[in-house]
Length: 73
Image 1 (cartoon, one colour):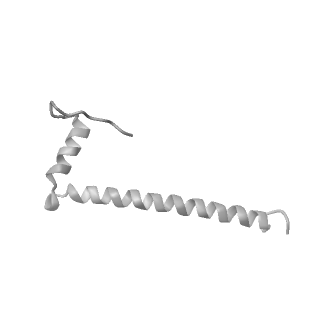
Image 2: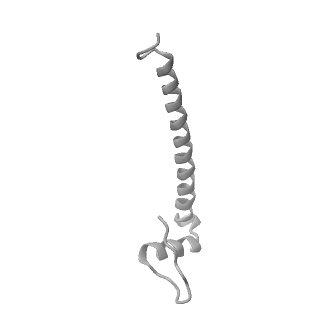
């Protein structure tokens, strides 16, 4: 078939879509891994003073007098 749901063109479109979704999934898995690492640093058993300070600065806007803060999205 040349056209329709079972055509070679449709197959190519689906393969391209699958490739894009695979790349998007890989990016989300990487982001999830980074977030899990940060979350583990905030658990009571493995509390990191640096991580608490970083979160307080970001959420509450705390800084030292000699600090310059650059905000990113």
